[in-house]
Every structure is written in structure tokens, then in C-alpha cells.
Image 1 (tube, chains in turn red, cyan):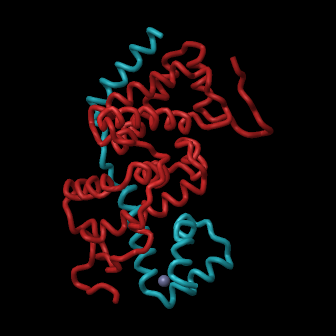
Image 2 (cartoon, each protein chain N blue to C red):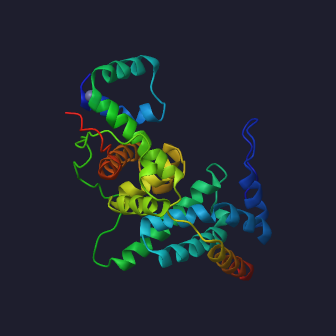
Length: 208
Length: 77
Ligand SMILES: [Zn+2]
């Protein structure tokens, strides 16, 4: 059993304390971790699998797997990053099951020029969010992000929605940092391009 | 600086990870290029909107059911 590693004066992350208690069989400590991260795991799983039932299964399986593998958790990465990696793998497994015969991987380099150069250069309305009802807006955002290749989608979600750093995203996905960076740029630009259709300022002509 | 060169630094600019001299160069490009101004602003807005809207919410009822199922299994481990 590993002990708490303290490097210099670095503070011990509260999650590490919970992990240590859970390793000793304290289920309540693990419950706290579940409550803290279940929403995020669910969101990530939904984004990858695009299927509600699969996402529910992923939440269960990811936490159970994490619980079983707690001994393998090294204090040198964040518990959350480690958990996300498990959740991403579980999600990809589910996605593959549904799309039998189709390669599903986040490593495959998606060769596409879409979004590498912005085409739609119309400026957006000053407050695009006032153009749509809340539920309409959610639908637009879902539809738009679902159109991205899974490898782009997941990088955008981890970096920009869940707020992981580039390094943490790379670690969670088993990708290199340059790969994360190039995907993030393309994901952001593609989403921007696609959202322009909905949010363009109708009172102005595009920049020519 | 060309638009492609500007785009290559777009993410660093958005994430506030550019050096001071680089920022000056990028801002210089922006002063003369309306296209890149639009791209920068709308890309920022894209990120902001996705951050703000919870598009896959985990309803409380389901959340509790999942938590119970997970913990019941953990106790059996
Ligand atoms: Zn430009």
C-alpha cells in the first residue's frame, strides 16, 4: 500500500485523502468522490457515446472500476484526471459496441481541413443567447457538437467545458500535448463555424 | 503576419498563454484585419456559450439511483 507522497511543502489534495481512506475500506469516503464527480463523468460519457443509457452505464462502471483499482492510483496525478481516463475508456468501449464494424478511436487522426480556415466570417449578433429559448439553445449546442469527430469532441469537452489543462487532457486521453493542441484548435474553429449559422447578426452583412 | 500565422496562435491568445512581444504582434494584425477580429471574438463566444449551458444534465433522481447502485456494489467488493 502506498503512502501519501509529500513533495516539499506541496499541499495534499483533499481527493488524495479521500482515496486513502477509501483504500482502507471506508466506503463513505468513496461516496464523497462519487458525489463530487458523477455529473462530470456523466457529461463526458454523454458527449462521447451520445447515448443516454450508455452514459448511465459508464457512470456506474467507471466508478466501480476506479474503486477496484484504487490501489493502482498514484498520487502524482490528480484523482479526477485518473477517473476521467477510466471514464473515457469505458465510453469508447460502449461506443464501439454500438457501432460494430466501424473504427472508433480517439487516436485516429482525423484528416479534415474543415475549420482550419474560417469561411463564415459574418459577425455574430451582440447577444446570440437572446435569439433563442433556453431549450432551443441547448438543442443547437447538442446538435452542433455532435457533428464533430469523436476525437475532436472529447478534447473540446475536457479542455473547454470541464476545464482540464492541456497536460491533464493529454494524460486522460493518452495523447501527446501537440495532438491535444491541434485538435482543440480545430474543434473550436469547427464549432465556431457551425454556430455562425445560428448566431450571425442578421442586421449586418458578412465582412467581405 | 498573415491570417494563417494569426490562427496558429489563436488558442494561445484565447487561453492567455502568449508572450508580451507575441501579443503585440497579434494585436497589430488585429488592427488591420477584420476577419481575424471576427474569428477571435466568435471563437471566444463559442467557448463561453458551451461553458455556460449545461447540455447534458444529470437529473437528481437518476443521480441518486446511480449513486446507490455504485455504493451497493462497492460494499460487496
Ligand atoms: Zn487576419
